[in-house]
Length: 183
View (tube, helix red, strand yellow):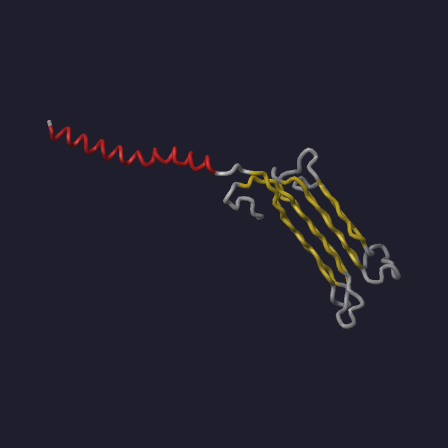
């Protein structure tokens, strides 16, 4: 009988010591969480930059397709656009076929949210897209097609353009963690 009681005590002791650690972690974790600062809302910014300067005296095509994901965390999409075509004020482009920049921003449902089609100098354009009531979720595409000329010898002719998208996302920043780092 004593051996049975002793065996049961040994087994009971082993069980208690192995579970106390696990069960003891719960109140310890709650105590540590109590010392931690509260989480805060923060913003991250994903930037997409499409720019090109032409360096050949022959008309050169340029194409670029950039894809990014829009989800519930996206609060704003900012667009900056600027184009420069050397001597476009003196020699206007006929039918917009020689030198140009054509860009479209299409949402995941195939709706064009922003577009530009220029063949002469364009002052900087800044636009903001905001959810109304929400952005279409999924892959959005910035599609750029352009043609231009340039030369490097004298530096007098160099068509160029610059498109910058800034996608603003909302996130929760926890203290001592880098949970809101940009993708």
